[in-house]
Length: 262
Image (tube, rainbow, N blue to C red; front, top):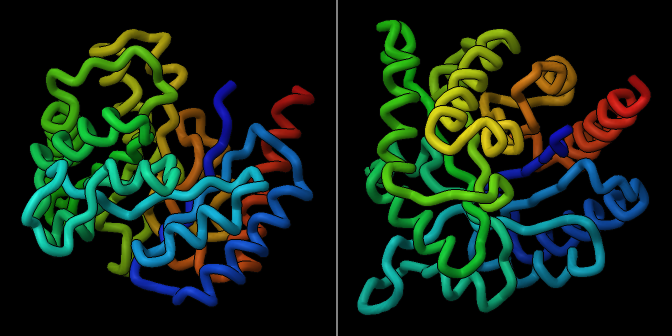
């Protein structure tokens, strides 16, 4: 049985004080739950990663960066390398997020290069993939997802499914007024797991965590987590409000407890 991952992507929100205070609240809450089958991640902006690592150090909460350079070092103003993240003990990093692809023209090839750099420094990448509204309406979801998986993972050797996390983001269901049903999300998650089974084996695929990243909120997370291939959420706006984030964490804990009584 796979663990559930509840990951909060703060994007360009919260300052140093808010990071300290919010991170402390989440750390205390996670410690009180003491349930290792639910993994809790927060992804603050770059300037506050060190504070987040410090404030969560004695708790189950882990910290993720929101992106990383695909270069190792050099004259690349504004870039942050995987080695730099490793030097402050950041264990996870989001790569290929739809906003990075849209606004910063990141491609599957550069996502792959980022992933390779993270692997070199024992940082777990959270690899984001997903189709746009136009692609969804054109019936190209499967084609796009499989193309992105191939582009990101081609010639990447993986033996341990714990070394990587995949997040499915239906871009068409984020800020468009349209919502993906749990069944629609499950269909794509199953497709992703099937692809990994074909390329890395059934054992690897069965252990892989695939998160859903399409407007996850307290009122839909239970239905999403009830799906066979959805292993958690990469959560945006709802992760910025402590009460909402705590509610989603608690929902995940209750689901895990229920599964273990079955």
